[in-house]
View 1 (cartoon, helix red, strand yellow):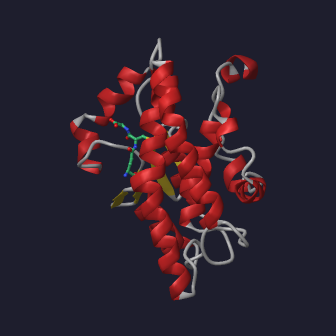
View 2: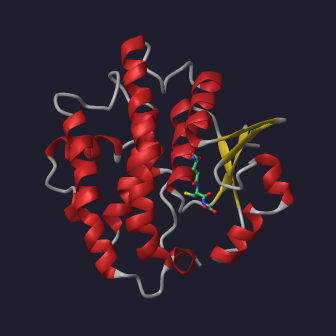
View 3: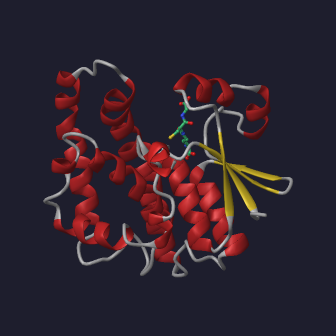
Length: 221
Ligand SMILES: N[C@@H](CCC(=O)N[C@@H](CS)C(=O)NCC(=O)O)C(=O)O
């Protein structure tokens, strides 16, 4: 039996970050998938009383470890790092730990919401996405990725000298952007980000948490 449970859907970049944290911290996790496949059923389960008990803002992921429940991805990452990973996801140097907090906050407040709302959600969830609005958003997203690239100048990771919560929050997001039409050109020429990407995308935590692609189930039958 897995030690901890993550509630969410595998396609969510935040859920993947939470799962990556478990793998990095060496704790076995079970993904308890919300809903029955359709977006509507996922949203209905998020808004159910049972889920609101776990997450008062009706979002995912949520981690459950016995009777301990943790919501917010960076808190989940910090929890598994401390409880199971001997603090492996937070730099031990206090100056670098602050640098990590800075990039975690920048990811959560600017890079992830702008990318999700202006690029991912319109392309993934709308039948007829407003392509003009997506094109209009690209300079802002490009500026965000250039900022990330600059932060990685002379470094292999965003803070400290090994993978931290900051890297784990950003890797699934960039994976999803890169997989969508028009996404890769937004950052593929940014060399520092490219170096970082090669490193993080080869880690077992990233590879083991890849979301299923359309058609995977049929191929497995
Ligand atoms: N700040 C939250 C963000 C979580 C979040 O927005 N998750 C999305 C999935 S990627 C969600 O639950 N969306 C459902 C909704 O907005 O109703 C965290 O760090 O976990």
